[in-house]
Length: 473
Image 1: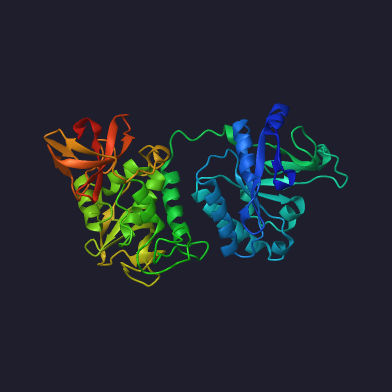
Image 2 (image 1 turned 135 degrees about the vertical axis):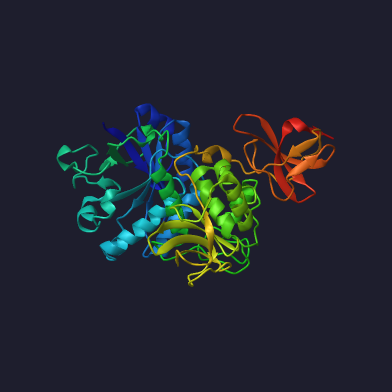
């Protein structure tokens, strides 16, 4: 199977994508950022033109980074520009900068891995673009397990495919930089791919190993396991997505911000060890199952313990991926692995110091003796069941602005942590009585398609109630 496509940037200027599509185009890889880590001035027009004309899209970044911090900045810029938008093909890291080459294979390896982690954590495919010489002399064997798009064309490039130059590896080949096609004035790069990313079907069921690995990898990423740069809490709401900027001890984090946006109490400005674990579970399982695992009081470690005891998931022995509770509910982490002597953890709002640090300000990987008296117990998690509801449950940022006042018509009405009767009640105000007044802020559908209101109670508590039992005043 061969799919022919092009890659474009501001060099092609304005493109008539309707003509390109009519000519026949299997894919387009668009440059997303340029030197200075700024957006390519034609990226938005090119992305719009491709999507409107049903041409599958990927993006690439010509990297100028000279260290891990710089390449992480490049990756985060890409993620911020895409902002959750769908692309069918990967984000390609373009490695061809001569100054970068002098860093050596080991540094290139570490930088590429740091870039990849950010891209994959954001939900995008990852690939590497380079020429044949880079692949043979600079790229180490560890990186060659990833998808490579190889550039190789003749010195006397006439815009056509020269079969004798075809590489016998990689998922794609850039065979010309001087092709001519309708809709583009001047020359354009021409490619053939052997892997059709746009036809890749999602797995119908994630395996236990996949979900457990995703959860563990996510924790390792924020603990800086491979980069040496852990996520640090902030002194204010600025730079919440940056790992190092605006650091302080006021308990501001991206995790609390995101949890708030999902209609849950993210508790910004308060200790965040439990919110961090909840955030990871939502990313892996979706909001509904994360609430089922930790309960409606997920932001409080003691509530998590009580919920697990009620559900029968509270255990005295560790398990990979389990939550671990310390010091009578003073702190929480998750289990990365364990052996006969130690349990190895991933924690938020801790530090690199040994022992339980319940308000340390960063994400870290740590270890404790299994016999430590600081360990209360474990919340076991089944990573082999449950549907992935991330796409539907976290896609909508709920409004907290009251739209109208509603009156409860049922004798008693449960206030739940998410839309649906299967979800736990909130801890702050779990029950409403007939005649109670609430502020209705938003509307959402539950899994069974029933309508639920996102409400505010007493001016400060938020939760979900069935729309059937609320009458507009």
